[in-house]
Length: 340
Image 1: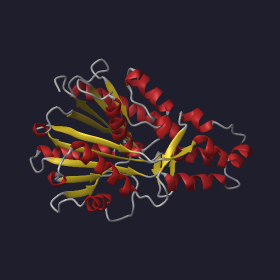
Image 2: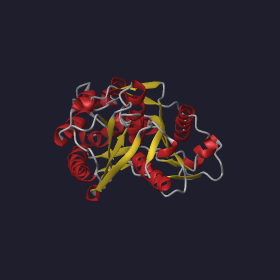
Image 3: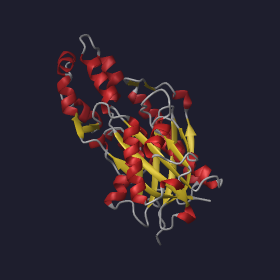
Image 4: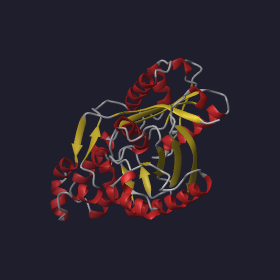
């Protein structure tokens, strides 16, 4: 029994922080290290990212996206049997973000709720968990949410890198934090027969390369990463996962796929990934240049924007491509039947 996507929604902060503004605040460090302005955009292609206002919590972003998805789907919230939060960002150590969103929405007590965490891969894992519960017959509808807030780590990293004596090595180690963005996403899944004319989750594959589990470490207030190694080994893992998908999933080839919805962190990463996997670059839906890296919310936000823009429409076969620190990789087929 397959699942269909009733709705997928994206919400974005209004506040914009440009890469030029970050580098202006780091101007003393840049001058001492003899770094040119424009380094962030030059290396990553990211011109700006969005930040929620101070005090706006990850659960608030997830709740906004959830309400939008419910409105778009016209689904009675009482029919939801599961709510999964997949955010990297957390309001608190406990309770779960899912419980906060569940409470904000006033969902039925019989709607199960919990968090699923797996770095930037969390949302796809949430889809997998919800799909299995629907397929088992335990529930008929589920919602997956993600609310990401990068204000605290970005601001803390700017302060850290503004201090006297910061070395080039320290800037390189913390550089990835400066690419982070914020946003919220929600997806409602339903049993296929309850969602006629909607795109269907058509299978997926996953591979791990956990020997590289310490290349990217997320702390509460910052993120440290060996970005070149993450890209090298992440793309190697993506290629192995692509080959597995070719063997196990129907119509999995560049010729058969109409739209790529990737987790995206930079222009260089996307270029290397595209070349290594042999993908048609024009098929990729990209937004990192103005949203930055939004963690697990990136794939659903990109899918929602593609839906709004008409790129994800009846007849389109989409491939969701997720890579997360750990390292883990999941690729998922979403087929919108041509008679929809």
